[in-house]
Length: 142
Image 1: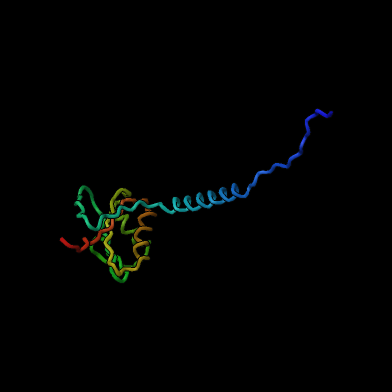
Image 2: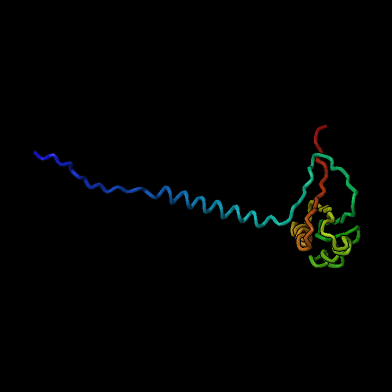
């Protein structure tokens, strides 16, 4: 009589396909989320369109208006050229080199988006992070 236990040789293997799928999805998620993090260099303080903004005149504010054709008006005066370098010079002059000076941007609804981006870019290059965009209150049922 043969009492010895029989040894079976089994080929056990783990299916790695679901693990690889999860790793690739995590990789894509982290790549996308870090891209969004790097683009967020300028803090923009957008006001509520339906609420009334409180007026704060504690310090000097730079007023920038972008008209429907993309022309810039800083402090009520039109800039000679409409580019980022001219905006930077105007911001430096009004803020006296203080990057904590707030900038209030009023843009026409038909203004080219590139012009608004140029205002944000000029402020970012000078280290100015306090931007607010003025909107008109939405006309709704009262």
